[in-house]
Structure formats: C-alpha cells, structure tokens
Image (cartoon, rainbow, N blue to C red; front, side, top):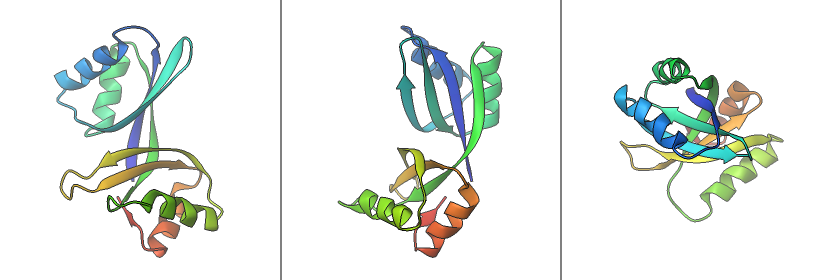
Amino acid sequence: MLKQLSIYAENKKGTMKDITSILKEEEINILGSVTNDSAEYGIVRMVVSDPEKASQSLIKAGYICRLTEVMGIEMADEVGNLNHLLQALSDSNISVDYIYLSFNRDSGKPILILHVEDIYEVENCMRAKGFTTV
C-alpha cells in the first residue's frame, strides 16, 4: 500500500516552492502529485519517498498535513489502458474518488494512483482481474 501525503496550503504565490524546498532539504523525493485549488486554500496530494518524515517536516513548518492510504496500479503506456482500468473498476461497481499519475522509476511504466473507499478490497479485485498493484 502507498501512503499519500495531503497538504492543505494557502493559495498564494510561493507556496509550492516553499513545500518543495522543505522536501528538498529533507532529501525527500516527490514520486507523483496533483494539486486542487480553491479561492483561498488548496490541497496538494503527493506520493513521496518518505511520507512520515515529509509530514513531520511540513507540520513543523506550519502546514496542515494528513497521510492517507492509496493504491497504485502499474500499466503499460499504451492507448486505451486508462479506459481499460476504468472499465474494470466500473464492471466491479467500484467508485474512484480521484486518480493521478506517477511512474515506476525502475520499469519506466506509468503508475495510476487511486483513492477508493475500501482500498484492500479494490486491490484484491484488481489483482484478480490481472492488474499489477504497487
């Protein structure tokens, strides 16, 4: 299971640079991320090399953080593979809260990061359908 770091941050100039500077100082690698913003605050979701250390460092700097379990599904970089995955999820009556992209630095293949309600059940279901989870 992967742990995702969610950072609740003020939507202002320099915030992302501040966050990435803290992670750089702690030698934490960002493996995948997505940012959702609103008028005043945003949520930065990241899969990082050391989520606990990243969370502690950012909290110390004044950010509100949360760690959440997410799942990763490795896939070949081919036309239609995301649709194939989404069809398999739909066929299994699984709803996805959100999805974003990372990649396996060893294999070079994309990894789709998914947040779902029952991560363990979905992981077993996807493995049974032939998908590779990380």
